[in-house]
Image (cartoon, rainbow, N blue to C red):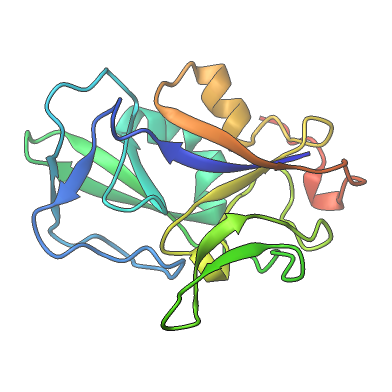
Length: 196
């Protein structure tokens, strides 16, 4: 079983930024992006079905990719339509599945010298009992504005998981960087194979 960080590489693929104040993707429901127009911020990207955003805790994708991934994304957040300056539509995935599954005893944090507060995670450790089911995108309460994760357990991943659907559809641009590998756990009832 692996815990992966979900991201789009902004140096390789198109990155988008809002022309108006940027919404904060904290794990809360937004309802819509309002009239936000997104503008490209890097000149000559490789073609991709996904777009990096001003925050790593959300991503945008083409309308076609969103339609193909709807079953894997919609139960765990919002699919918010947006427009790019060029006029084409994209869909922003705002993950609202916030799961408190970090192992506080084993996780190593960078602590601010002056503030004494946690700044970012240096080494992750997760409590396997509190992890969401395999295939579910999720955020941690401590880093909800900064990161997006997924549990990938090849023994218990449903065919409808985000990783499976991205691979099956041949979509380009979304990465799943392995952070932690854990021994597999027994399947939960919610992890049984889904019929598509």
